[in-house]
Image (cartoon, protein in one colour):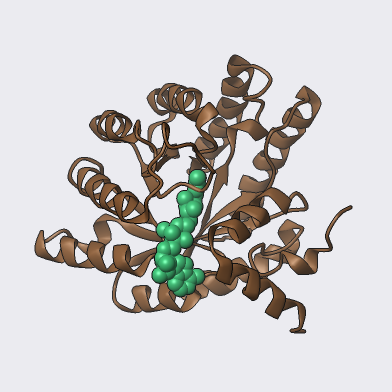
Length: 283
Ligand SMILES: Cc1cc2nc3c(=O)[nH]c(=O)nc-3n(C[C@H](O)[C@H](O)[C@H](O)COP(=O)(O)OP(=O)(O)OC[C@H]3O[C@@H](n4cnc5c(N)ncnc54)[C@H](O)[C@@H]3O)c2cc1C
C-alpha cells in the first residue's frame, strides 16, 4: 500500500521538480540557499540507475535554467553502488562532468554503515578529478569518523557534518546523545581549522549556539562556513541565522520515492509524528 503524499508534505517539498520550484524560490528570496535531493535509494537495476543519472543531469540543467540558488545532493545507491562500484563511479563521473560544465556542485549523502568505506573511496577518486564540484557527508556518531574526518580534512574536502540518521549497533556508532554532541563539536573544530568551507548540518540548538560561540571566540568569520537544516524543520531559525549574518542552506527533498526518507524523520524525533498529524488537518 502506498501512503498518499499529504502525509509526507511536512518534510518533502513536492512530488515533481515543478511543484518544488516555488518553495526553492521562496527560500532563496529569504537569502537561504538550497540543496535539492531527488528522493530514492538502493537501486538494483542498471536501467533504473542509468535513468537516474539522466534525471540528475536534467535536474542540474533545470536548476541552472531557472536561476535557482541550489546545488544537488545524491545517494550513491541511486547510482548503482549495490550493483557494481566501478559502474557507480562512472555514473557519478557522468553527473560530475555536467556539474563542472555548469559550474555547479554535487554532494554525496552518507548512507548506512555498510556503504561508508565505498562512499569515501569513490568520493576520494571523484575529488581528485572534480575538486570543488563534489562534496561528502560525515556522520559524527560513527566510531570510525575519528580517522575519516582527519583524512578528509587533510585533503581539504568539502564536508557536511551531521549526527547520522541510520540505526547502527553500538560496536559501530555512539548511542548516547551527549557523546554524539561532543564528537560533533570535536569534528567541527577540525573541519573549521583544515577545510575551506564546512557545512554544519543540525537542528540542535545546543550545537548551533556552540558553533556561534566557538567561531566568535576563534575569530572565524561567518562567511567561512554554513548551517544546514532539513526542509520543513526550523525555517524560522534559518531565517534568523541569515538575518544575523550567517550562511544557511536548506536540504529540500522531492520526488515520489519519499517513504524511506519520511520514515527516518519520524523515527528520529517523536514530535515529528505530531507535525505530520497536524499537517493532515491543515489545508
Ligand atoms: C542538511 C542535512 C543533511 C543531512 N544529511 C544526512 C546524510 O547524508 N546522512 C545521514 O545519515 N544523516 C543526514 N542528516 C540527518 C542527521 O544525521 C540527523 O539524523 C538529523 O539531523 C537529526 O539530528 P539533529 O542534530 O538535527 O537533531 P536531533 O538529534 O534530532 O535533536 C537534538 C535536539 O535538537 C533540538 N531540535 C531538533 N529538531 C528540532 C526541531 N525541529 N524544532 C526544535 N528543536 C529541535 C531538540 O532540542 C532536540 O532534542 C542530515 C541532516 C541535515 C540537517
